[in-house]
Length: 256
Image 1 (cartoon, rainbow, N blue to C red):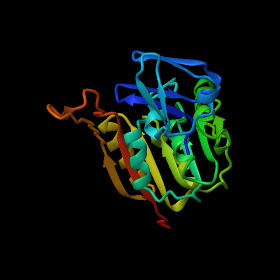
Image 2 (image 1 turned 30 degrees about the vertical axis):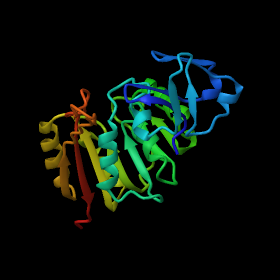
Image 3 (image 1 turned 45 degrees about the vertical axis):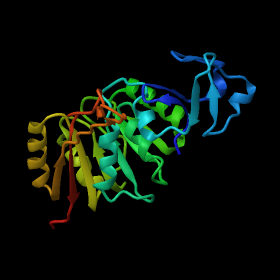
């Protein structure tokens, strides 16, 4: 389960805390919450009171709460897109997953709660890796992710071709630059997922991968709109997730 505490009053007034034992107080526009020794040992579901007499509840955070608050050094895949990956692949608790493009660690953080094996994540930026591992340590289990640095512009990857993965997820504008690696380490019947920002990149990538034994292509754009429910005047919530990226799924087959 994700680590942390969601201190909740309303959709507009909530605070995500990774470790309630490391802070003495929280300041909100509804008053200050003083975290004495009794509150620091409080369990989920309990009610706490601010200095202005307003109530907050201590909740177990949802994955979406965490993903929206992690520290970002690059564009981060949204929770709406991450969830779609699980239902469009064959990933299960025994799957072996390779991620190319660790980014801020959002996907690895989420997926690590659903599979038993460590996720192997690659990135060309040491800064990204350091930040992502800090995010994962803060809200999850650092032992569930093995992050490796791709050291140079030649895209030399520090894994052996005898490794076989059930799923490869690539969050890069040109996923086909790792075509040779993918062909060598993705199992026959395995899932390929690539995440790109525009439709022309989708078309080019699909055309290339289709020539090398990939079938069952599906491309999605996920749009999510939350509603604000009131007694009078219910309406869509002002902040909603429109286009962020395109997700494409495919299966590798053996054409030999």
